[in-house]
Image 1 (cartoon, one colour):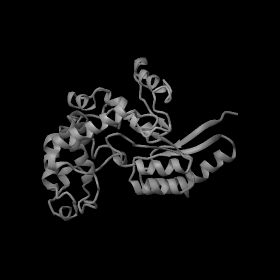
Image 2 (cartoon, rainbow, N blue to C red):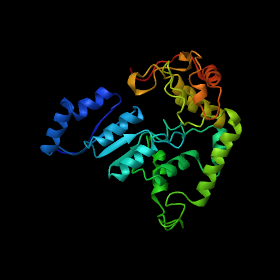
Image 3 (tube, rainbow, N blue to C red):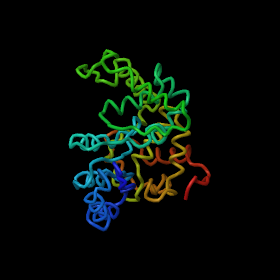
Image 4 (tube, one colour):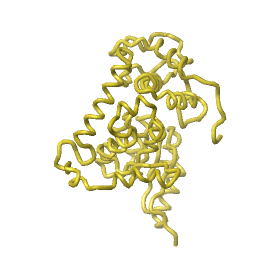
Amino acid sequence: MSRLTSLAVHGLNRPEHLAWATTGPGAELLAWALEEGLVGQVGFSSHGANDLIEAALASGRFTFCSLHLHLFDPTRLPLARTALAEGLGVLAISPADKGGRLYDPPAELQADCAPFHPLELAYRFLLDQGISTLSLGAEQPGDLAWAAALAGPSPADRGCGPSSPTGPWLTTAHHSALARLAAAGRTRLGAERCGQCRACLPCPNGVPIPELLRLRNLAVGHGMTAFAGERYNLIGRAGHWWEEANAEACRRCGACLPRCPLALPIPELLADTHRHLAAAPRRRLWG
C-alpha cells in the first residue's frame, strides 16, 4: 500500500476553509486517511489573516504548517514561533520570490546587504529564527548552490556554535549587514516609514493599509520597485490568495490618522503608493 509521509491542506485562507478542514467533511476525510495509515501527518498552508492561522494552529488538527515568512515581512514570525514551540514543523513559503524577488535584487538592495547577497541574508535570517524548512523554487541546477552553501560548513566550523549569542546561522558579520540594511531603509524613507504596527486597522473601507505601505517601504527604502509593483498589481486579481482592495479604495475618511503612533499622513502615502506602483493589468500565468 502506498503511503504519503505528509499531506498538506493547501490554502486555508478563509474561515470556511478552516471549518471544512477541522470540523466539516474535510476533517472526516483527513481523520480517515490517518486512521488507515495512508498518510503519516497532516498539515496546512495559509495566505490568510493572522487570527485565522492562529485558530488553525490551536485546533490541534495539524502537525506542520506552511506560512509566508520573509526577511522583508516578518509579520507571521510570532505565529511560527508558537508553532515551533508546540513541536510543529514550519515551512517558509517562497522566501526568495514572494519574499522580494531576492534572486534578482536591485542595485540599492545589493549595496544595502553587502558584502552578502540579499538571498543569503534572507535564508539565514529565517533559519536563525528556527524555521525548519525553506522552499527554494530552483529553476536550474545552479540555483541549488544556495542550499548547498547553507548546508556547510557546520555551525562550529564557522565559529558561531549554538552557544554563541549570534546563533548558529548568523555570524556577527551577518548581524551587522542586517543592521545596515535596516538603517538604509530608515534613512531613505525618513519620517514616511511605516512601522508595520497595524494600529491603523481596521479600515472602514477595507484598505489593507499595512500591506500597501509595506510595499511602499520596499520600493522607496530599498529600490524594490519591480517586486512591489508586481505584488501591488496582483491585488484584486487573485481571489482569497491575496489582498482584494488597493489604495484606490481609500476614501480619506481619516479614521486611521489618530491611531497611527508615528502620525503618518496615511491617505497621502496610500495615494503615493498607487501613483508609483499601479500599472495596466497583465495576464496572469494562471486563472
